[in-house]
Length: 346
Image (cartoon, rainbow, N blue to C red; front, side, top):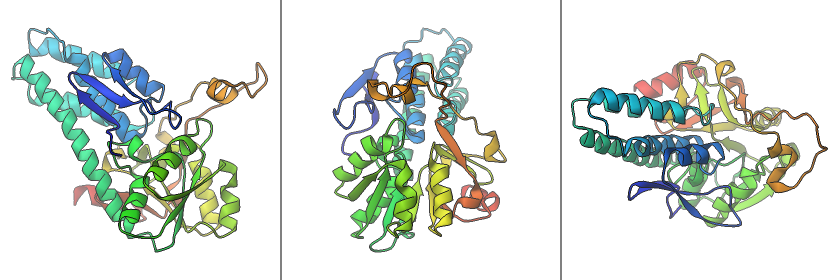
């Protein structure tokens, strides 16, 4: 991505409105806290790392005009801002990781003046962006060793530059391989119901000059059966201590199909996506989206009026189906309860 997914510009947050892609490329500005919340909720900005960045920058925006007389007043305002942003989406742990990091940064500098505190928080948010860029590049570097010349990779949803600061997690592996001169190709699931695969992943891969073929979600088994897929690489929004990984709904299906066809299934995510407070993925909160995203997708009604709808936005892939987890610290192999902690503490 030559244009930042999300950034701080002259006291405002500028981001790519991903709901308009691929038909329209448009950058919008968030001038207030409510606009940031709405952008996260409505998926104008999406992808776990990008949501974390939005949360950090949103925290800054929320307190930027504070007139607090002392740290106690400022801290109260800060907590209200972070509590509000925390209600936007429940599954991606990066959101809460970033909000907590901003709170801890303020506490660490509580003896600074209010104006200095604002600058410190902005610097912290910008540091999160730079760290994310470095982590994405590292994920790509580590994942490169898992791909062979001529491999075709299946991916689900979008875990590219649009989901991060600029390079991606799952797609970082493909971008890095392409830049290294490996002859790879990609099959991208369209990813119902909001089509992040067809609208975003296919667009990003084409922009990068990578050979990509778009398929419907329910075609994955057939292309695997035909021997067209050598591995699957997906992102994650939260990974439990045992390696269970939450990702866009339909990822679990892909993992089961990969195991049935003896195809490696890789999860790529930064260490900020690890949640060691959860022993297993059974405790990961799963967001449920509005029924209209299924019954009236993109403004066209495709279901009977009054039909009941169940629309979880994510599913959890059991660690037993994951061949390896690619992180910025290296590649974790089973048992993940040992290897993931080992990467973080090394």
